[in-house]
Length: 341
Image (cartoon, rainbow, N blue to C red; front, side):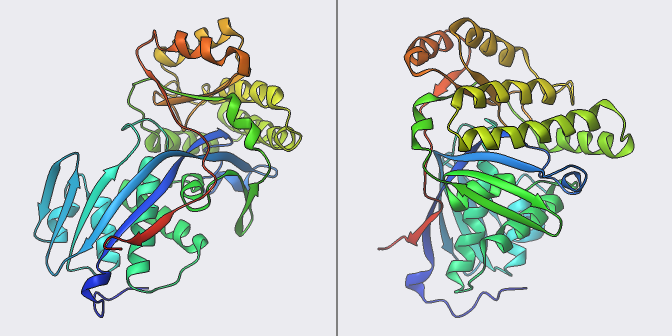
């Protein structure tokens, strides 16, 4: 499906797009094909947060511009862009057969924080361009296209869980079934917000290649510890889903700890001393549970904290290297509008 860069009036050539990012509670890595084919009722649970990605798209007749943190990168053609850090953008622009465009990144969460910012940005970009060209596509198509573009960019399989929160918002359970992915937006859980605290370790997080390592080990040795730990993560995620529905948030926190104990054994690169330091602080305060986001190795940690201990815990975390992030659950997904309205 190729989209032609024709027939757009000047007043419709600029868009502002905003989308949430995400925190994952359990079941990450299982969202990567073919891993979810091997386990019983595999699912991923995550939620959207107001650590927004905001971009502005301006269609041009020639040349390609990326504005990021007051720096402007200019490319005369897509071949030039393909050879650098903006290869994923070039793949998107090539897919839409663009002759020129300017992308201004107005807002993102802290870089390498493990909150899915790059995936939210990709959804903003794809949704915005289809909108400009008056092409109606489903969210499932956007997610499938995003997954393929990320794989083409990185050179190995990628998952889909990060694409759902920017499009749907809220607390989500993504069920991975043979032949399809089924999304459930879990309603009536606004009370969980008062127990959530998100802390960024300040350590750079990279997940893709680490997850690919896990996939290879699981497939190559189906009686090995990686296979067994992923099976345990799948079991924990199913249990967590049930306790979330029951609103037993203390038990959800305990399951987050179990998930992390199984996950950090998948790869030595998943843990980091700064993660351990934050968890030690949590243990002393009596936090219910914790789960480093994504494949970890740094980035952010989600904690479930009894409400009466939250302020003490926050103050103790502020003595460490990282920072407490002021993010909350957001219940709506991507927003798009013309820039001149």
